Amino acid sequence: MKTKRTFIPVFTLSVALLLTACNGKEAADTKKTQTTQTESGTEAVTGSVAESETETAGASGTKLDDLYQQENQIFADHADVWNKVFGMMNKSTADPSGNYGDYLADTVEANKDSFSEDELNTLTDDIATIRKIEEQIAEMENGNTASEDSNAKNDSEEASPFRDFSGQDYDGNTVDESLFSKNAVTVVNFWFTGCKPCVAELSKLNELNDAIKSMGGEVVGINTETFDGNQDAIKEAAAVLESQGAKYRNLSIDSASAAGKYASDIMAFPTTILVDRNGNIVGEPMLGGIDNQENYDTLMKQIQSVIDADSAK
Image (cartoon, rainbow, N blue to C red; front, top):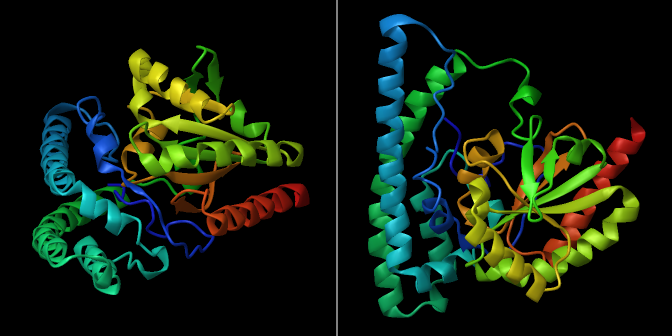
């Protein structure tokens, strides 16, 4: 079972950033009818054993989806105050093994003067509920992880969601993993149209794309609402990109693909990752818009690091 929060440090580069992010669960909701957020991680077998494992994985995935949606609803019910919290998150304080509710509580406590008494009461009640939900999620994920570990491949690079990649740009042109192999580094930005911080950074991402072209880099956008060739969503995303002067490539991908499942695990938007020419993710995901100059400078340093490593090979 993949973790549902990609800011957990499963990659190599460390980043301590002040985040300005949308709650990604709203975007994830649009995809949950098409694909589950869980993967069984087990090899196919025959007979009644296979049927039993499939039923177990299906039940587990359904339960996890239900728990995620319970959290979704909490954030949606009090979106205004939770968006304030997401904008205050400091990634360096996240405990990968901790309860997400505790992380949220620490963020609120550190910024409590920014909230009214009513807002604090709302957040306190919500966090208490989230803690309980997270305890259930952790119990289920630990069980799934144990099952996956017994069948996991030793070659972690084979598990990269971008090593066998396919998609289409908004003009209908097919794109595959050669997108990455031709670049020393590809900056992949996950966003959705209704996310204000996502839209706010589009022009800056276009600026970044222009800046790194001569260095062997490229920016690529993946709008999670355009999955599976959703034409209405593609038209809407294209209009937003045009309004912000963003001309870099944006892609629609299959929600059931490895990259689609990776995107479904993202819980805060915008999120930006770096992919090397072999399709491997390098460093930790960056949460928050690069229209924040500190974020932009940090990302540029990471990009340069990947390019330097590529040149040294």
